[in-house]
Amino acid sequence: MATDVGDATAVEEAPVQAGPVKVAYVMSRFPKLTETFVLGEMQAVEELGVDVVLYPLLRQREAVVHPDAVPFCERARFQPFLSWPILRSQLAFLRQSPRIYLGTLWELLRRTWGSLNFFVGALGIFPKVAHAARLMGAEGVAHVHCHFSNHPAAAGFVIHRLTGIPFSFTAHGSDLHVDRRMLCAKLGEAAFVVAVSDYNRDVIVEECGEEAGQKIVVLHCGVDTEFFRPTEPEADEGPLSILSVGKLHEVKGQTYLVEACRLLVEAGIDVVCTLVGDGPDRGAIARQIADSGLDGHVKILGERDRVQVAALLGKAHAVAAPSVPTKSGKREGIPVVLMEAMSAGVPVVASRLSGIPELVEDEVTGLLVPPRDPTALAHALRRLHDEPALRERLALAGRDKVKREFDVRANAAELVRHFRTHAGIAA
Image (cartoon, rainbow, N blue to C red; front, side):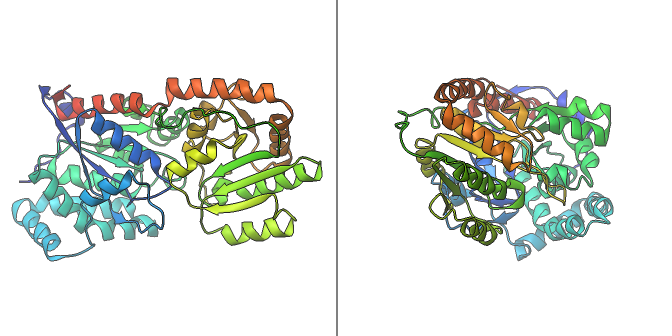
């Protein structure tokens, strides 16, 4: 039976009992090739004894799927937008606790009014999320964790309102930076909120007030530092091998990397740049490569899974992440590919933007350049070409940084501690 929402402090002070904990993960889409951070985190928390159940809002149809995602897909609770079981759950809530059910729907729609994306999205997912809430209550879910502060966090808000199950959410990049509608209400109901960077924490505090900071935990997304590890270096002879991994989209800034490669070639530097990924800007980038006469120097490889990405890292001299803020307000959090590259001992060049400097310390663990500055990007890449000692120094410091602060297992252990505390279950 649904219960009214209790005070967040009351949940924190619940008696802590020993035993396993069941955590439901909610995300926008699964499996999503570009969201390895969610997959890696779920694997790591399961290694720590958490029983993870998956409730994606949508099933993503991908041409390439990470092999490790397949078992999660097989047991994920994918739901349509409407079905007889979903309708029965609405009727059950209306019979058992009509005030809570209707009040939650009203609060969700009231707080998302004015944003077509948020309002329509909230209206669309509410029935299936209410059904998921009923299933979670029946199967003993002790905590709900949502990846992304937009629709998934709204789902956590609804589940908590309908069942009393504590929830938390992780705020990443564009989900936080583009439209923060309803953010403070979600934070108010959440047991705690994870910010992937100090930068994101400051954004949330600026939006919701200093008191909000008491609920925010800064936990970096992490990578498997045993999987992504240095390999025998390739011979220094031959062209400068640059790797860029990410969706082919404005926010990733690949167009500036292509221009930087043109400048390098023009300066007599032999370059081979590989773009791994796909997306809406693929056609435009392919035309730019052709128009710049770079067909022999820059290639679009398409999507690859993490095993293939690790193999490509083993052959790269440098990884470039020339992220930019878009006109619509999109910006990266901290790109996971930078963590993967640094963990694999590959020096990186990245934009001085949002939380990136928290990972890439300029001249210490990598090189930073201004966004939208292909000349500065070309200069940084040329330094890595001309100075092997710099490459080696940055590679060693970069891996050390990731092992200390961005290891997925260490960060997952901290996250699990919060799950258990708010679920009232001891380690």
